[in-house]
Image (tube, rainbow, N blue to C red):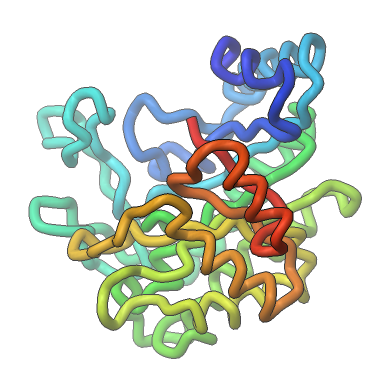
Length: 287
């Protein structure tokens, strides 16, 4: 993190994002994923961000997340497959006991009391991020991770007040976001990454995402980072340069919320054109 984030902090980008950092150990994707849930984590990340700010000029953001049913896997370089018992797999959690795909762990369906405790973990991570010195927080609500799992009817098949209609499916994500907003200074931006569509029949639609964006805006969400997919192994994504840009534009036009576009953006001139043409307010170049 010191070298990776430090190099980007020197210039060019206005904001450098520490990618998905998890709110508890169960929320990690792999056993090598970063977290911000202990004093040791906080001390280590503070060293990194202090370094970035001492020698760099960019603002620093933290993407806060929980992998849900997509956790307990090998690191990508080792195959990214679900861990076996012999590899010290841990039990994953999700809105419903539905695995991501064939061969994946069946997650434990969260109870409402467990959801309340998990919200506290999000809040504690936000409080640690403030002490570390981050300027921006982005709640990870996309790419098939826990918050996205609640939003998607493909992963959320609960029969209580947190499942069913789009209003019920977004109830827990909104509760978590509101708790994070209340724990984060009002003068510092708090945004969210979402997957605007699931690319699977019966999944989340852009209309659902616009409804969600309006509710988030009322809670003080400053921007929406608009990606897509990754919640269901059956997805068919038409990968092409700027393939997510129309979704950012749709959210921006429908809600007035600032949006970020991300995903296969083809270099500086055409990417800058997305902003100049009003299709997005800013863009993210990944890794």
